[in-house]
Image 1 (spheres, one colour):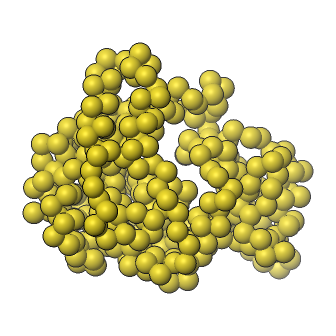
Image 2 (cartoon, one colour):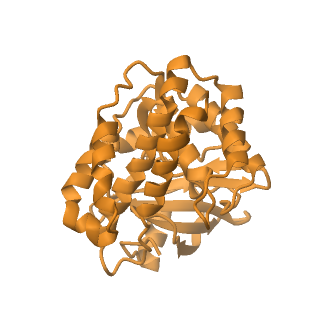
Length: 323
């Protein structure tokens, strides 16, 4: 379970009292995620039915100075009727609070289930929703640099070192060379706006074939839209069991996105190399997490080699996907 800091019932009840959401009824730790502690919180007010929220304590990779961007972007997109949860502000109007020296935020709970084996129709729905987010997020007032860009990925792999990478898998040290190549890509001329940057299936809630929630915007940043599209493609369009590329799913996602926001010629030309870099981002972050996750943390490490294999697919076929 991804709960690094444990809050007692009394502490949780006291925290919830700072919000106009009723009294705490229950709180349960959420297993998903590797960077933050999360609880599903249920409250009830006088004469009201139960209400649900997500309480997040920011543990790793979160700079407090970024929280106004992350939480403000949620409110901006939610107000534009994108399927994004809004931030619940406390009684003083603050979007987050401090507890034990760490920031906490209460986020709207949205219904739905994250698909483990998405259908082409579900992939299309995600492509369409991502296109809407890219369009509606263009005029959000704040910006944030991408701290998980291609150069950052290379630095993370080099910091791990070849011995540590080889201890995860013998083939992993060889990925440093293509990561160095990706770090040299010039993407400065591509369309940029505010992007999610981590839209895996477990960050999307769905009811049947409809997207009800896009969540966990804590890697969101201002960067190339094609990078976000490639990242989402890499996360959604491979079989969960075999890791093989699912062509029908991939085509559905890309086609639906392009109906909302057509790609420019430069984006189409560079999509293959961008997708390779997007896959390497998760090789790097997973390798880093493998060594940095505390041994007593209730969280399962993720295999970086899964995305090495996806990188190989994009190296061979990426140029043909949006031709």
